[in-house]
Image 1 (spheres, rainbow, N blue to C red):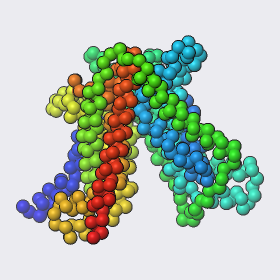
Image 2 (cartoon, rainbow, N blue to C red):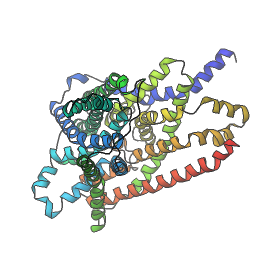
Image 3 (cartoon, one colour):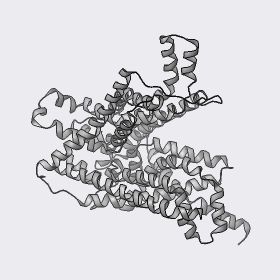
Image 4 (spheres, helix red, strand yellow):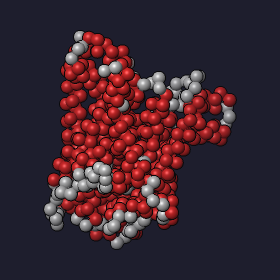
Length: 524
């Protein structure tokens, strides 16, 4: 074999992830989104409803989420731990389980025929639930930007004694990038949300873009052209929101982080502001997690289900999620390794960054619809098989894992791997004793995030569920739409319990094994 051929084979071995991305992401999306006369199908009602609901949910979630972010990052506030707990629990609770919990509560006799029930089973209820799910996104996005701010703005206002009004204007100008980033993230997540429109929205026959895409594909025959047109519009809105987010960071990056960046020394907030923060964090936790879970438990154990509970769907989703998480980690590790080895080639880094950002902007329902269209015909027919569902799970979560793993893995110096190659000849031992312990923390965290996301994933599961092996999310939504709330509550609680126990046990055991047993051997 010539040197040129050997170099080509090494390049192909390193770049197999690029082939996987092209076949599993670019090919189905391109084949679907550019199918037929996509720009002649404009559903004004669905587009208008989606934009209005997303804007209202953003307006409701932004003040609460940004206040919690500001108190956590810019003030010495004791409620930071409660904020972390509330945001993560609400973030991890699937939206359709949040809807089911509140729905079973409102359907009780003392609430059913009241103004509260009339408001809940309408646009007001959808906006409220979307706002609850948007608070964590607003808080996370705001904290990420506020963490980069220094103390210059506060010091300038104090030194020049500009007065309270002028100082408030300067503070508002300094906080504008973080608030705008939070608003854009909440808006993008709200307009892509599928679980709440598929449950509460379907009950009131509300036309919104994500659920209308699904209904167009669920008809016989499937309306691929109409679904493609609506998907292009939804993806365009999501990409526009992501573009605004990127533009804000590029525009204000030099302002937030500069050569004379000074560390911030947080001060205690005023009592009124601190009380508002405590109230916001407690309300987010109670309304977004405690009440829905308590309502689900009361519904699950208060009466017997009218239909059998499909417990097998829990096992099916666990298997799908384990396979999907493993496949995703393998591709992402190869992608980051190839990108790290090719830092001298600018287009590799640009392509990887563009893929992660564009992939996160593509809604799950659009990706699922693309898989239905691309793999329901030749040359490769995979529709209706568990393999296609696992590949779709992996493609949907891959951009998120690229963003999560890129920074921590790039901090591991390449000299450590080079030293391992020199001193350890066995590749298996090199992997187990050196490579995995160095990357154990980020890999376990990202793997668990991917696993939990895939277990409760709904839009892709609805479109690609294989016959006879129904995923957990599809079973829960089917039971909800059939008014079998008790069976749906039992199934949802079982899924939450199993994922929590398995995830905590797996992460704890693997972390101890990799970092507590193998790590000392590296130093020796």
